[in-house]
Length: 227
Length: 248
Image (cartoon, rainbow over the protein chains, first blue to last red):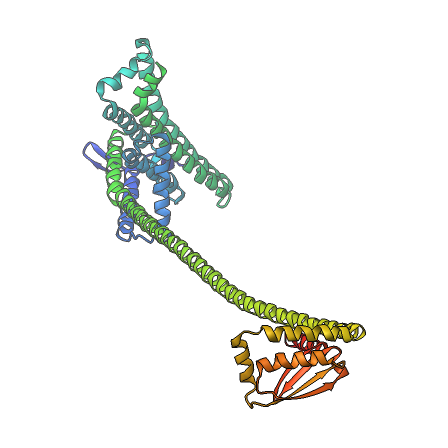
């Protein structure tokens, strides 16, 4: 087992900025998605074809999932949460391509996404309720709970990042180990498991992000209801 | 497991850029086309609803028109029934009139038949009565009866007023002077003389007398002067009675 197979390789070093293979893969995914969306958006019709119907089905499914959690803010949350789901699905599944590593097996990527979720949840809560009202729920039901709230916010963000990173890295490592030990066709069942795990992890990350954001937006009403 | 800050920052920037890309090239156009489709569906639903409303209005209009037609049909049927009833009543009245006429005719005919029958019965009764009276008088008639009848004739001739006498004389237009006097029984000379004198008082021109006997007269006399004949006997009376019954 080569240590370079699982390590994060720096492709370019532009002064203090290191361009790793994770970033390059992300750029490739972004370019692929941008190209697909651009091509699709040019051919949208009122009478949809099979591809347009599938894309609309995905968008409507994401919108309905958001609407079930935050009925009044589905259109506001759709770009962020939908982008999380789409990016994570593509990023998790791209490791099935030989020689390509999933960006989500890099802790830097998952940490960056978790940090974005952290800030987006607070920004959405403040936007929906105002700064005072939003920060007030950290003192509910008692100011004694403030440290626990802060610890909860940090720990769930760290857990969000580490969960995705650990699962995806372990999947790639397991597939690599089985490929090295058992041969060429033996990892196929593991790859099927990889597909399922990639979809599940993307769903879990996106759903947790949605719940955190929706929880931040609706915390004041929950606190008022409890009181 | 190491955290590369450059990768960390670049991934955050990359994801923010990806959000922008997807928002502008995926979510916005796809949601817009879905909204347009929903708007189109809503318009079609509105059009369908408008068509349905129009159809409902037309259906109500047709229902009202149909109801009106039914009312007109009922009215026409009522008028036809009234006309038929009036025509039937006219026919019935006309038939009743004809029937009344026929009934009246039948009653008239029946009454006439009844009167004829009654008249026939009366004639028969008169004839039978005449026959019975004739048989009775034939048995009961005799010289005494004739004598009383002759006396009665003489008395009546003498009692005639001038007008009756002149009328009697006008009957004797030929001015015959011969008189034939028939009697059922032989008259006595006294009676013949008084009868001749009474008759001559009425008809002074009579100068010849022919006294005959005719038993068919039963009792009484028959005076014949030319074409004029005076019967004062039971046979002529019975004959006149019978003729009276025949002619009503």
